[in-house]
Image (cartoon, rainbow, N blue to C red; front, top):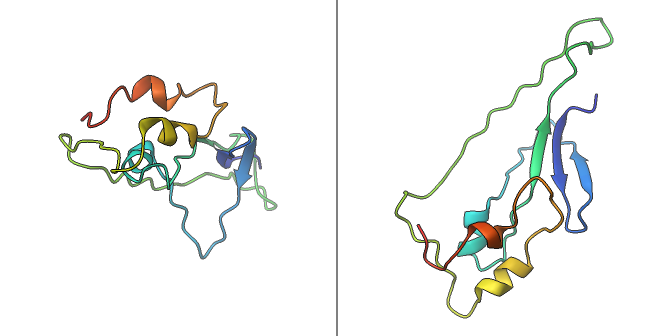
Length: 114
């Protein structure tokens, strides 16, 4: 089925990700992009559910199961750009072209914001 994790690459193309059974996917967020100076880049993504009419080869209904685990800083942790890196450099490294997510530069308004 077309269900599962979809990510946007640096060219703005959407790609379905197939994760091998013995692997784990780690989604990187924008906080990590900021505090690493853009060395790690956040990936726009979405998860598409299974069509409720879809069944497997034995006629059984198929469900999608995920277990998101969000790891974040404490609310007062300042998102500070590393010394020697500019806000503009970090924004330039962002994935562009995602119409559903406003650009990071429109939401991250200053260095050190909490």
